[in-house]
Length: 177
Image (cartoon, rainbow, N blue to C red; front, top):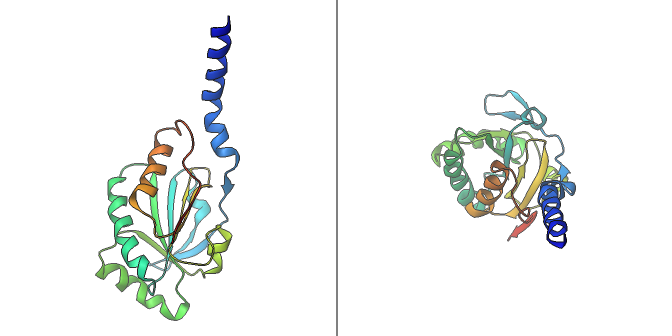
């Protein structure tokens, strides 16, 4: 009898684990931007996909290190329900620098612009770029990475989401500066 009760309790905790991990999740604010072709883009249009949203700027030294790694990492998730987007917080006078910046560094990520650094605060990233958030398919923020995201920071969370959120949720906030 005692063994049965313990087994039922463990089963209940196992079944509730995914719910516990999303209970504290915060829905991402909407983001209106433009892509490099000048087309309007909305973050809310990506619901149903896991999204890695990296905020960066052409003048940001750590971004020069992070973006090529994210671009390479995005290739390993090709064909999966994951979308990587590099969102520039450059000022309007610097928009013309974005595309050449990405091309010369061979960064193959969807790129959006037309937002300012205030957007970082709305996503809970503070005021410093780079900053990265990973969103689940419902648009909830799974992790906030303040500073330069490492491959393992991103991979751990993407794999956790893609594998059905097994076990305990990964840490929700990382400071990398």
